[in-house]
Length: 86
Length: 270
Image (cartoon, rainbow over all chains, first blue to last red; front, side, top):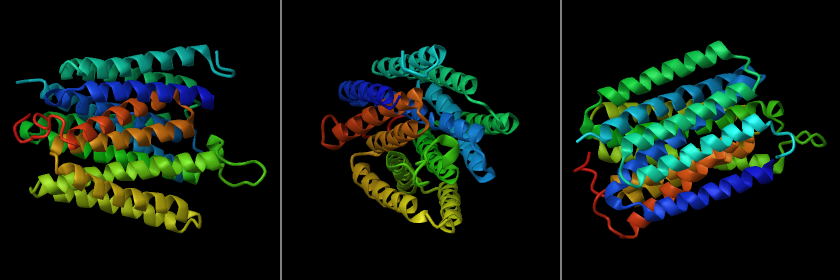
Protein backbone atom coordinates (compact mmCIF):
# COMPACT_ATOMS: atom_id res chain seq x y z
CA UNK A 1 0.00 0.00 0.00
CA UNK A 2 2.81 2.39 0.92
CA UNK A 3 4.55 1.68 -2.41
CA UNK A 4 1.28 2.33 -4.26
CA UNK A 5 0.88 5.62 -2.39
CA UNK A 6 4.50 6.57 -3.05
CA UNK A 7 4.20 5.93 -6.79
CA UNK A 8 0.96 7.95 -6.98
CA UNK A 9 2.53 10.77 -4.99
CA UNK A 10 5.67 10.88 -7.13
CA UNK A 11 3.62 10.84 -10.34
CA UNK A 12 1.51 13.72 -8.98
CA UNK A 13 4.67 15.63 -8.04
CA UNK A 14 6.08 15.15 -11.56
CA UNK A 15 2.85 16.42 -13.13
CA UNK A 16 2.73 19.32 -10.65
CA UNK A 17 6.29 20.27 -11.56
CA UNK A 18 5.37 20.32 -15.26
CA UNK A 19 2.39 22.58 -14.48
CA UNK A 20 4.50 24.84 -12.23
CA UNK A 21 7.11 25.14 -14.96
CA UNK A 22 4.69 25.79 -17.83
CA UNK A 23 2.37 28.25 -16.02
CA UNK A 24 2.75 31.79 -17.32
CA UNK A 25 3.05 34.49 -14.64
CA UNK A 26 0.09 36.49 -15.94
CA UNK A 27 -2.19 33.42 -15.67
CA UNK A 28 -0.93 32.40 -12.26
CA UNK A 29 -4.09 33.32 -10.37
CA UNK A 30 -5.74 30.22 -11.79
CA UNK A 31 -2.92 28.09 -10.40
CA UNK A 32 -3.09 29.79 -7.00
CA UNK A 33 -6.88 29.37 -6.80
CA UNK A 34 -6.81 25.72 -7.87
CA UNK A 35 -3.88 24.92 -5.53
CA UNK A 36 -5.87 26.46 -2.68
CA UNK A 37 -8.85 24.22 -3.50
CA UNK A 38 -6.60 21.16 -3.76
CA UNK A 39 -5.07 21.96 -0.35
CA UNK A 40 -8.57 21.90 1.10
CA UNK A 41 -8.30 18.11 0.74
CA UNK A 42 -7.10 18.27 4.34
CA UNK A 43 -10.85 18.28 5.06
CA UNK A 44 -10.98 14.64 3.88
CA UNK A 45 -8.24 13.78 6.38
CA UNK A 46 -10.22 15.49 9.13
CA UNK A 47 -13.27 13.51 8.06
CA UNK A 48 -11.37 10.23 8.44
CA UNK A 49 -10.05 11.21 11.88
CA UNK A 50 -13.48 12.37 13.07
CA UNK A 51 -15.06 9.18 11.74
CA UNK A 52 -12.65 6.65 13.20
CA UNK A 53 -11.04 8.23 16.26
CA UNK A 54 -11.85 6.53 19.54
CA UNK A 55 -11.10 9.40 21.89
CA UNK A 56 -13.25 12.50 22.20
CA UNK A 57 -10.32 14.94 21.95
CA UNK A 58 -9.09 13.38 18.69
CA UNK A 59 -12.62 13.46 17.28
CA UNK A 60 -13.04 17.13 18.19
CA UNK A 61 -9.72 17.96 16.51
CA UNK A 62 -10.84 16.06 13.41
CA UNK A 63 -14.15 17.93 13.39
CA UNK A 64 -12.28 21.25 13.69
CA UNK A 65 -10.18 20.23 10.67
CA UNK A 66 -13.39 19.39 8.75
CA UNK A 67 -14.87 22.77 9.67
CA UNK A 68 -11.79 24.75 8.58
CA UNK A 69 -11.23 22.62 5.46
CA UNK A 70 -14.83 22.89 4.24
CA UNK A 71 -14.80 26.66 4.78
CA UNK A 72 -11.59 26.83 2.77
CA UNK A 73 -12.99 24.62 -0.01
CA UNK A 74 -16.29 26.43 -0.50
CA UNK A 75 -14.79 29.87 0.05
CA UNK A 76 -12.01 29.08 -2.39
CA UNK A 77 -14.54 27.99 -5.01
CA UNK A 78 -16.59 31.17 -4.56
CA UNK A 79 -13.43 33.31 -4.73
CA UNK A 80 -12.20 31.48 -7.86
CA UNK A 81 -15.54 32.06 -9.62
CA UNK A 82 -15.26 35.78 -8.89
CA UNK A 83 -11.63 35.92 -10.02
CA UNK A 84 -12.71 34.88 -13.51
CA UNK A 85 -15.08 37.82 -13.94
CA UNK A 86 -13.74 41.03 -15.52
CA UNK B 1 -4.83 -4.73 -8.17
CA UNK B 2 -3.23 -3.79 -4.85
CA UNK B 3 -3.65 -6.49 -2.22
CA UNK B 4 -6.40 -5.66 0.29
CA UNK B 5 -7.68 -2.65 -1.65
CA UNK B 6 -11.32 -2.60 -2.78
CA UNK B 7 -11.47 -2.15 -6.60
CA UNK B 8 -14.30 0.40 -6.22
CA UNK B 9 -12.16 2.54 -3.93
CA UNK B 10 -9.12 2.25 -6.21
CA UNK B 11 -11.12 3.26 -9.30
CA UNK B 12 -12.74 6.20 -7.48
CA UNK B 13 -9.39 7.38 -6.16
CA UNK B 14 -8.05 7.23 -9.72
CA UNK B 15 -11.04 9.27 -10.96
CA UNK B 16 -10.47 11.91 -8.26
CA UNK B 17 -6.76 12.03 -9.12
CA UNK B 18 -7.57 12.50 -12.80
CA UNK B 19 -9.95 15.35 -12.00
CA UNK B 20 -7.32 17.03 -9.80
CA UNK B 21 -4.71 16.78 -12.56
CA UNK B 22 -7.19 18.01 -15.16
CA UNK B 23 -8.11 21.02 -13.03
CA UNK B 24 -4.49 22.18 -12.94
CA UNK B 25 -4.11 21.52 -16.67
CA UNK B 26 -7.21 23.56 -17.51
CA UNK B 27 -5.90 26.29 -15.18
CA UNK B 28 -2.86 26.64 -17.45
CA UNK B 29 -5.07 28.29 -20.06
CA UNK B 30 -6.29 30.83 -17.51
CA UNK B 31 -9.83 29.44 -17.20
CA UNK B 32 -10.12 29.85 -13.43
CA UNK B 33 -13.82 29.06 -13.15
CA UNK B 34 -13.69 25.77 -15.08
CA UNK B 35 -10.55 24.59 -13.30
CA UNK B 36 -12.04 25.39 -9.87
CA UNK B 37 -15.23 23.47 -10.76
CA UNK B 38 -13.22 20.43 -11.87
CA UNK B 39 -11.15 20.51 -8.67
CA UNK B 40 -14.35 20.78 -6.62
CA UNK B 41 -15.81 17.79 -8.48
CA UNK B 42 -12.68 15.80 -7.67
CA UNK B 43 -13.01 16.76 -4.02
CA UNK B 44 -16.67 15.66 -3.99
CA UNK B 45 -15.68 12.28 -5.47
CA UNK B 46 -12.93 11.90 -2.86
CA UNK B 47 -15.32 12.83 -0.02
CA UNK B 48 -17.93 10.36 -1.26
CA UNK B 49 -15.48 7.45 -1.45
CA UNK B 50 -14.13 8.34 2.00
CA UNK B 51 -17.60 8.12 3.51
CA UNK B 52 -18.16 4.86 1.61
CA UNK B 53 -14.91 3.26 2.76
CA UNK B 54 -14.90 4.14 6.48
CA UNK B 55 -17.09 3.25 9.41
CA UNK B 56 -18.40 6.70 10.27
CA UNK B 57 -19.24 6.92 13.97
CA UNK B 58 -19.99 10.63 14.23
CA UNK B 59 -22.05 11.37 11.12
CA UNK B 60 -24.31 14.09 12.67
CA UNK B 61 -21.32 16.02 14.01
CA UNK B 62 -19.45 15.64 10.71
CA UNK B 63 -22.45 16.86 8.71
CA UNK B 64 -22.84 19.82 11.08
CA UNK B 65 -19.15 20.74 10.70
CA UNK B 66 -19.36 20.39 6.90
CA UNK B 67 -22.48 22.54 6.63
CA UNK B 68 -21.25 25.22 9.04
CA UNK B 69 -17.85 25.44 7.37
CA UNK B 70 -19.29 25.50 3.86
CA UNK B 71 -21.79 28.22 4.77
CA UNK B 72 -19.09 30.37 6.40
CA UNK B 73 -16.75 29.87 3.44
CA UNK B 74 -19.41 30.70 0.86
CA UNK B 75 -20.47 33.78 2.81
CA UNK B 76 -16.88 35.02 2.99
CA UNK B 77 -16.11 34.16 -0.63
CA UNK B 78 -19.17 35.91 -2.01
CA UNK B 79 -19.41 38.96 0.23
CA UNK B 80 -15.86 40.29 0.43
CA UNK B 81 -14.85 43.05 -1.98
CA UNK B 82 -13.09 41.84 -5.10
CA UNK B 83 -9.98 43.89 -4.39
CA UNK B 84 -9.40 41.93 -1.18
CA UNK B 85 -9.74 38.48 -2.79
CA UNK B 86 -5.95 37.79 -2.62
CA UNK B 87 -6.03 38.46 1.12
CA UNK B 88 -9.06 36.18 1.39
CA UNK B 89 -7.13 33.41 -0.38
CA UNK B 90 -4.31 33.95 2.13
CA UNK B 91 -6.83 33.59 4.97
CA UNK B 92 -8.15 30.34 3.51
CA UNK B 93 -4.61 29.00 3.14
CA UNK B 94 -3.98 29.89 6.80
CA UNK B 95 -7.09 27.89 7.69
CA UNK B 96 -5.80 24.96 5.67
CA UNK B 97 -2.45 25.04 7.49
CA UNK B 98 -4.21 25.22 10.84
CA UNK B 99 -6.46 22.31 9.83
CA UNK B 100 -3.38 20.23 8.92
CA UNK B 101 -1.88 20.95 12.36
CA UNK B 102 -5.13 20.01 14.11
CA UNK B 103 -5.37 16.83 12.04
CA UNK B 104 -1.88 15.77 13.13
CA UNK B 105 -2.64 16.61 16.74
CA UNK B 106 -5.78 14.46 16.50
CA UNK B 107 -3.75 11.56 15.11
CA UNK B 108 -1.19 12.09 17.87
CA UNK B 109 -3.92 11.87 20.51
CA UNK B 110 -5.34 8.60 19.21
CA UNK B 111 -2.61 6.74 17.24
CA UNK B 112 -3.81 3.19 17.91
CA UNK B 113 -7.09 3.85 16.05
CA UNK B 114 -5.10 4.45 12.85
CA UNK B 115 -2.47 1.72 13.26
CA UNK B 116 0.38 4.13 13.96
CA UNK B 117 1.76 2.24 16.98
CA UNK B 118 4.46 -0.43 17.00
CA UNK B 119 2.97 -3.59 18.55
CA UNK B 120 6.26 -4.64 20.19
CA UNK B 121 7.38 -1.37 21.74
CA UNK B 122 3.98 0.38 22.02
CA UNK B 123 5.66 3.50 20.68
CA UNK B 124 4.92 5.42 17.50
CA UNK B 125 6.16 3.77 14.29
CA UNK B 126 9.22 5.66 13.01
CA UNK B 127 7.79 6.31 9.53
CA UNK B 128 4.48 7.44 11.05
CA UNK B 129 6.31 9.81 13.41
CA UNK B 130 8.28 11.29 10.50
CA UNK B 131 5.14 11.75 8.37
CA UNK B 132 3.32 13.31 11.34
CA UNK B 133 6.19 15.70 12.04
CA UNK B 134 6.37 16.70 8.37
CA UNK B 135 2.60 17.18 8.16
CA UNK B 136 2.49 19.35 11.29
CA UNK B 137 5.62 21.25 10.24
CA UNK B 138 4.42 22.04 6.72
CA UNK B 139 0.98 22.91 8.10
CA UNK B 140 2.62 25.34 10.52
CA UNK B 141 4.67 26.79 7.65
CA UNK B 142 1.53 27.39 5.61
CA UNK B 143 -0.26 28.93 8.59
CA UNK B 144 2.61 31.24 9.58
CA UNK B 145 3.33 32.17 5.95
CA UNK B 146 -0.27 33.07 5.24
CA UNK B 147 -0.48 35.07 8.48
CA UNK B 148 2.68 36.94 7.52
CA UNK B 149 1.13 37.82 4.15
CA UNK B 150 -2.01 39.09 5.88
CA UNK B 151 -0.05 41.17 8.38
CA UNK B 152 2.14 42.70 5.69
CA UNK B 153 -0.49 43.43 3.07
CA UNK B 154 -3.62 44.24 5.04
CA UNK B 155 -3.65 47.09 7.50
CA UNK B 156 -7.38 47.08 8.13
CA UNK B 157 -8.75 46.30 11.57
CA UNK B 158 -10.36 42.97 10.78
CA UNK B 159 -7.26 41.30 9.37
CA UNK B 160 -5.09 41.69 12.50
CA UNK B 161 -8.11 40.59 14.53
CA UNK B 162 -8.48 37.47 12.39
CA UNK B 163 -4.75 36.77 12.69
CA UNK B 164 -4.78 37.25 16.47
CA UNK B 165 -7.74 34.92 16.96
CA UNK B 166 -6.15 32.25 14.78
CA UNK B 167 -2.80 32.51 16.56
CA UNK B 168 -4.50 32.37 19.96
CA UNK B 169 -6.37 29.23 18.86
CA UNK B 170 -3.16 27.56 17.67
CA UNK B 171 -1.41 28.52 20.91
CA UNK B 172 -4.25 27.09 23.00
CA UNK B 173 -4.06 23.77 21.18
CA UNK B 174 -0.27 23.64 21.60
CA UNK B 175 -0.62 24.44 25.33
CA UNK B 176 -3.22 21.70 25.76
CA UNK B 177 -0.83 19.14 24.32
CA UNK B 178 2.10 20.34 26.42
CA UNK B 179 0.71 18.33 29.34
CA UNK B 180 0.81 15.15 27.28
CA UNK B 181 4.43 14.31 28.08
CA UNK B 182 5.24 13.41 24.44
CA UNK B 183 4.89 16.98 23.37
CA UNK B 184 8.52 17.72 22.45
CA UNK B 185 8.70 16.04 19.02
CA UNK B 186 5.46 17.39 17.55
CA UNK B 187 5.79 20.75 19.32
CA UNK B 188 9.32 21.14 17.95
CA UNK B 189 8.12 20.41 14.40
CA UNK B 190 5.31 22.96 14.76
CA UNK B 191 7.68 25.56 16.24
CA UNK B 192 10.27 25.11 13.50
CA UNK B 193 7.49 25.20 10.89
CA UNK B 194 6.07 28.45 12.27
CA UNK B 195 9.50 30.13 12.23
CA UNK B 196 10.38 28.78 8.77
CA UNK B 197 6.98 29.75 7.37
CA UNK B 198 7.29 33.30 8.67
CA UNK B 199 10.86 33.69 7.38
CA UNK B 200 10.24 32.15 3.96
CA UNK B 201 7.03 34.16 3.44
CA UNK B 202 8.91 37.39 4.18
CA UNK B 203 11.52 36.37 1.60
CA UNK B 204 8.95 35.44 -1.08
CA UNK B 205 6.85 38.54 -0.37
CA UNK B 206 9.72 40.60 -1.80
CA UNK B 207 8.65 39.25 -5.22
CA UNK B 208 4.99 40.11 -4.67
CA UNK B 209 1.85 38.75 -3.10
CA UNK B 210 1.09 36.28 -5.91
CA UNK B 211 4.33 34.31 -5.56
CA UNK B 212 3.91 34.38 -1.77
CA UNK B 213 0.41 32.88 -2.08
CA UNK B 214 1.69 30.20 -4.46
CA UNK B 215 4.50 29.41 -1.99
CA UNK B 216 2.13 29.11 0.96
CA UNK B 217 -0.21 26.97 -1.16
CA UNK B 218 2.74 24.71 -1.92
CA UNK B 219 3.52 24.31 1.79
CA UNK B 220 -0.11 23.47 2.52
CA UNK B 221 0.03 20.92 -0.30
CA UNK B 222 3.07 19.19 1.22
CA UNK B 223 1.24 19.05 4.58
CA UNK B 224 -1.72 17.34 2.89
CA UNK B 225 0.65 14.86 1.19
CA UNK B 226 2.38 13.98 4.48
CA UNK B 227 -1.00 13.31 6.10
CA UNK B 228 -1.97 11.15 3.11
CA UNK B 229 0.80 8.70 4.06
CA UNK B 230 -0.47 8.58 7.66
CA UNK B 231 -4.04 7.90 6.58
CA UNK B 232 -3.08 5.76 3.54
CA UNK B 233 -5.28 7.74 1.16
CA UNK B 234 -4.22 8.01 -2.49
CA UNK B 235 -6.53 10.91 -3.30
CA UNK B 236 -4.94 13.03 -0.59
CA UNK B 237 -1.44 12.07 -1.78
CA UNK B 238 -2.23 13.15 -5.35
CA UNK B 239 -3.91 16.41 -4.30
CA UNK B 240 -1.05 17.28 -1.96
CA UNK B 241 1.65 16.32 -4.44
CA UNK B 242 0.05 18.36 -7.25
CA UNK B 243 -0.48 21.48 -5.12
CA UNK B 244 2.89 21.18 -3.37
CA UNK B 245 4.99 20.70 -6.49
CA UNK B 246 3.13 23.19 -8.70
CA UNK B 247 2.87 25.91 -6.03
CA UNK B 248 6.46 25.62 -4.83
CA UNK B 249 8.03 25.55 -8.31
CA UNK B 250 5.84 28.38 -9.60
CA UNK B 251 6.71 30.58 -6.59
CA UNK B 252 10.43 29.83 -6.93
CA UNK B 253 10.32 30.62 -10.66
CA UNK B 254 8.77 34.01 -9.97
CA UNK B 255 11.13 34.69 -7.06
CA UNK B 256 14.27 34.15 -9.11
CA UNK B 257 13.02 36.70 -11.61
CA UNK B 258 11.58 34.78 -14.57
CA UNK B 259 8.82 37.10 -15.73
CA UNK B 260 7.85 38.73 -12.46
CA UNK B 261 5.13 40.90 -13.86
CA UNK B 262 1.59 39.62 -13.76
CA UNK B 263 1.06 37.68 -10.55
CA UNK B 264 3.89 39.51 -8.86
CA UNK B 265 1.93 42.73 -8.91
CA UNK B 266 -1.20 41.77 -7.03
CA UNK B 267 -2.29 45.37 -6.66
CA UNK B 268 -3.58 45.44 -10.22
CA UNK B 269 -5.45 42.15 -10.33
CA UNK B 270 -8.02 41.04 -9.43
